[in-house]
Image (cartoon, rainbow, N blue to C red; front, side, top):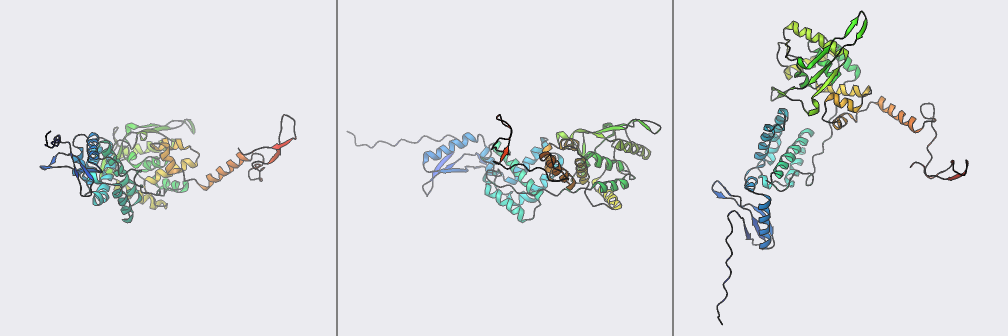
Amino acid sequence: MSDEKPKKKRPTKRGQGEGSVRQRKDGRWEARASAGRLDGKRRRPTIGYAKTQKGAWALVHRYHAEHPGRLAIDAETITLGQYVEQWLRDARSLGHHKATTHYRYASLVRRWIVPRLGAIRLGRVTPDHVQAFYTWLGEQGASGGDRRQCHSILHRSLKVAVRARKIPINPASADYVSRPKVEPAEVRAWTADEASRFLAVALDHRLGALFVLALLCGLRRGELFGLRWPRVVLDPGERRGRTIVRPASGSVRIERTIVSVGGRNADETPKSKRSKRVVTLAPFAVQVMLRHRERQREAGHYSEEGLVFTAAKGGELQPSNFRRELLALIAKAGVPHVSMHSTRHTSAFLDLEAGATLAEVSRRLGHASEAVTLLVYGAHVSPGRAAESAERMERTLLPSGGGRAGVGRPVPARGTRRKVKTKRGVGQTRRRRTGE
């Protein structure tokens, strides 16, 4: 019988790119993925720990199955700032972002995200980092809009990283962090009297028709700037003496918009799919538009394919110059100072006050959905409309004596006894549940 000890089985050689495991001083096994080479150096990022060597190898195999190719090297070498900037460029080139959205997001990334989170490696960003960032934004006095949009940038960009299997989870997801709570901004608008006073002054201005469309149709500033004559239909109607045989009618088709991006105008498609719409013009707006066209012809700025509203010397309107003209008209009319977008709010409020439904107002304004209209205007109800609603409910619930004349018959409490008609006859009493 031989005294030789059996030789230990030599472990098989690891395959190229398989990863590795090693035991730490604390007894745990560290699992490391193989992420190729960068600048001549091999990259083996740590992906987890296990109590046993077998468990560590299981982590390695599962990681490479879920992250094929060289995804690990991306997450360990690219910073969050570099990744978000690349995501912005990709979203713009693919048409996912309008020019204004791209410009706004890029400025937020430079101002807030890069200084605080930009140097962290993409694969090492944690929910704690993101939550601390939201807290920091509040401490720095960032506006509600900035905080909300910074969250949107992080959540959407990191969601793409998860879908591409660059990172296992989205650290900006609501499952791990609390998104910034932002109170809705106060919506400013004119009353009907203030809007009438403004129009009385603005009608004599060369852009009077623009303000008529803004207040009567609720068009956005960019939609007014980008409106062209081929998309305007004007029918002057027919008159016989003082008799109107056929009233004036017309419409405008919103297909393009001119927006300001970094101080320069950009011609783009409207904000959303529902923003492409046809808006009917009231007879008064038609007459104003007909006079505006004649004035434009007299000034030599009219073209059949040209813009409806132009600068004083022709060409596109510039937002800064237009703002100065708007402020001068507001001061002359003696009405509260508001932005151009507030004329759109005014149009919506007055239409709702006149009895229009939320769906009608939403279609006219070109909102992406009725939910947007409800979010912006649903909570703003005038005292008069609120009183009408209360009286309508009173008449519905108390038909026999409700209203201003007196108090109606009270609704019986649950479980009270009252006379009811039964199969046995009238006048018999029994306990009846009410209010159900």
